[in-house]
Length: 441
Image (cartoon, rainbow, N blue to C red; front, side, top):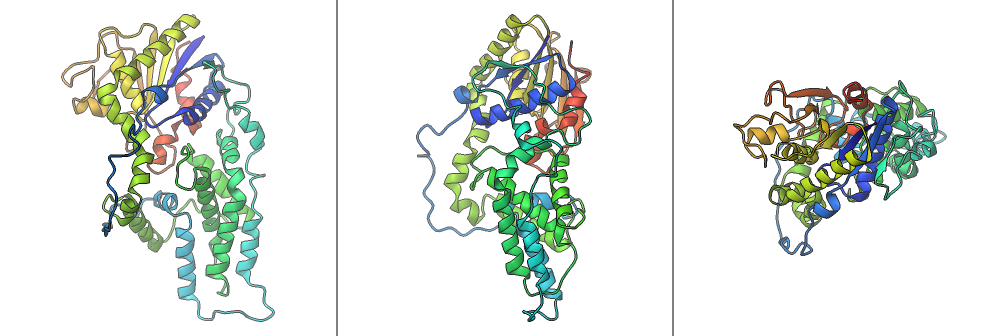
């Protein structure tokens, strides 16, 4: 039986690893029943943390911020989702402003039922019951048991051909937060549109706002919980179902130019290191980003521990099975695997390396890999290498031109904006379809 050792990337800790591992087990189990998935969780022992409790962070005094517009392409169809990642109600507010600007007669008319209150009531009544053929409870049943050293694919994996194979899991994540999100959007509709004349197009906008708010609440009020890995097809299935329940038609997330302008301003204000928002919340932002950015920095000078953990996982997989070993590695995990396999004494038994959203080719071009200099080829014993990337993932790079004849690049499209594109590979069912014929038997 082929063993796939799953190596996580930067910023991952126990809870997040269990979620990603469950997706890998479910996805591989759907396409290859003969696959055995083994753990390689290094984040707790070898990941970064602020050992002095953040003593290096300056105390903020009075600062004014300044941000620049124009960094976001206003014609990018993903702009709306990038906007809603920052402010789930921004598109709805833009719609309400346009309605008020065009409305000639506003105010309460005795005896008339406000059409916006009717819409708000429909929003409050939204459910996820009709979105997927399986219940959220059945989706949750594929989660692994904590503490087990290895997992075999379970029978609860989505059937081949089922639209959005990760849909039941997404529904399970969103369901506890849908009512609160729907109430917030309904209140916004009542407050900002009540008393104005009817206007077309509110249904998909309201559905997207409910979805974005539910995602935000699932990730915690300060995004302090693990980010949801969501495939764009599953996201669109949820939004489309919510839109239909409201009586509208989803238009794939496109918004008017004015709303795109809001996206430009909102995103640049949010991301700019000079913005007053970033400075105000610098302590929380810095501490929250330590696992992701700190793991990368720590690996550069303390990476031997991560590579030793991968070596041990490969050894365990080799000793416990009689089949080939595959390393499936995300992000920084892919860098560590390339470094390990390029060492003079690489672990025996690895027949295939699969890097997903990896920076290894980029670091080689920078001459920044640990075990391989830029003018050195991959060792002759280096295993077959498949590199998976998404063009929207700014942290995913290609390797065919960097290592000619030694790397095969596979492109996927999760239909997510960055940075969610970097965390959503393992929720994308097409990934497993592409890998199935490539995995050794």
